[in-house]
Length: 181
Image (cartoon, rainbow, N blue to C red; front, side, top):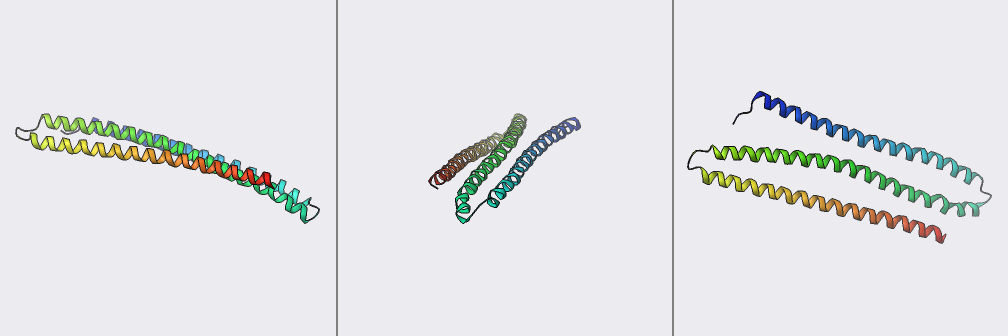
């Protein structure tokens, strides 16, 4: 079964559209990262100015020690907030690309299965055992790929859950230490 020039051109056009979609998603992800980093930089400059003013206004070393917890506790919370936002951006954009790849894989898998079925219909007499063996191997490969995809999804969900719990724990610990000071 040979492909016609029109079919090849259509396939290249579809692949180009897919590539453009992935590129746009990547650019959107980078844009979100830049916005986050600019916001964090701006806040850090403002905090630095405010903290410098506080330190310059200290009357003695006891004032400086008292300021220490008020200066460092918000910093830990801001770092955790930044990490959480960064993780969300990466997860969201990675998830979108991942879904697109899965869709393209499913389309390619369907097209390949259709081609195998067409070849099987036109196979010479006596080749049924070979065709059936090939179909069995193809089905086993597809099942293995689905198992791997499911395992990756489960591992990703577990990692996200664990990351969120760790972030919440650090923030709570930081708040508790701040209250004790």
